Length: 387
Image (cartoon, rainbow, N blue to C red; front, top):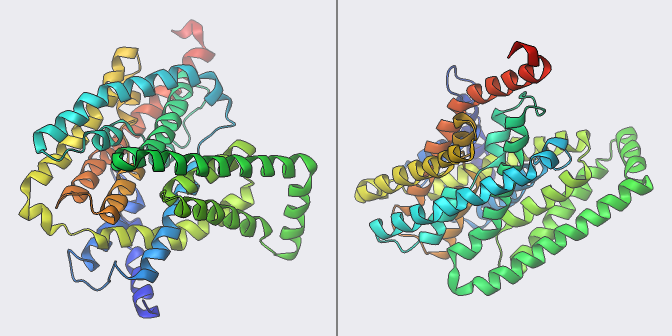
């Protein structure tokens, strides 16, 4: 990989935000980035070789940082998380129970044998997809207080479960590796907490700001890559490493300046590289050669909406129930891991991403109704006599 190829990737990644600024339904930037990756990769003009070791490594850095940002956005210190955690957890578990027959049923119908994998995909919620579209919603509203922990718990559980579901013969190895990564995240949390309580974090922040040293950014990148090294050594995806590191920062309270720096590094460079690489790695011609893969993708997307929509039975308002189906991080990880392990059938990786796109479009469409519902609940609580 040379500078010309890197410049091409960065240039086409600029087209990604186009979907995010269009009127009407706004889709996440990553959808556009994957699309341009498809155009310049194996499906399209083959201008980029996604198998190159340098590009693959840079994409893995991007993957870890994307998941770090997702983990750091989980509002673990928000009072709304604590007040709604029990009901949110029960709903996440209930969705998982409903997802099991749907996942194994889809695997049986299409003959893939990946029932456990499909169950995880169907049950998952992506915090980094749902929470940004709900930005501005009143967290004091009951619907949001119950929604946030549900999304966080489902997202975390499915990220941990994904390696086990994808490679059952090596489940013990994946469990040990996952435990090692989580333990490393726990150590990071303890260090961050001690630095915060001792005042060292504040002093480092002031020194870094005064002299332009970016100390916090350097430390956080060291932490993320250190935990990623543990993941690689134990044969676990860097996806879990990034997410666990992000949760550690979220639990302590990520400094705003650091958040902006990490957002710039990730969203401005490494994140787009990962999603363009992922799109370039896919061969969508397989969908034409295997039309059943298209049906599989639509079935997985519909199954996700059904499983999450079934939470209507728990008295969760329908737009809030359906919006939790929004899911991209876990399907992306499944596609990347599946191709690396060579365990997916032709067309299966694009099918999983197609199913994810179905849920993402639904999430984007339901953001407005959920925000209006939250506003109405807040108004009702403030003016009970008006009800």
